[in-house]
Image 1: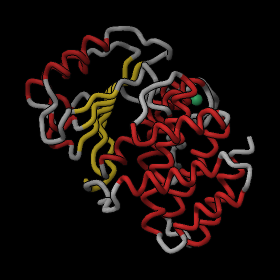
Image 2: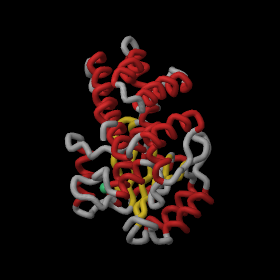
Image 3: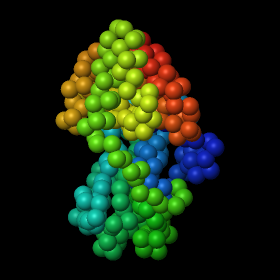
Length: 295
Ligand SMILES: [Zn+2]
């Protein structure tokens, strides 16, 4: 998924943006509250901005570091997560993070570790992570994601800056089966390799009376565009159910088109969030995606 820029209207994001611009973003940051997806999206934005080699505003979205970050394939942004949401963050994982932190970055100037569900880290794990938070290598940042900072030891909290996304919420409940979403997203994706604009209009017809379907399908479209980009770069792993369509897009569209298509989907997701008129959004979907692929 393309990583958007920081939202200057949002006080938490504008604070982070200023800190990064001034080179003052802390070595250890805790992001709490919001949904798990919102926390991860912010962490991805921060990590891309920290290693971006393009101009302001960072992340620029087009430098090699930003592109790899957006494709979730940057070697200097390792993501760790408790394997099972119910299980704790294992202490041996924390130890491995510590070892890796002392290894210099591969491609970027910095290394950014993202720790998902960090609140599930037990005392032993927290004490292990504390050792490195006390004296982190100069090129390392840690971003710990959690529903609430209250799960951390005061010693850990004293070493980290806390950014709050407000009240913690569960993921948006998605009642449409993935199979249906993949099928809807694939219809749109396949229509983009046809030279005929009308193919996309036809494929978008299924959303005309189904705003919920469109809302849930857009993130899957993002997944497909990101997977197609990943295939172009290094042939990284792609989810089975979208691999065929992603390969097709990857072979038929340019990187630039894929990036713009992904950006267009971002814009559509945002307008749905702002309750834009549904029919207009469907029309924009066709226009923006067709425009994206002419690059
Ligand atoms: Zn960049």
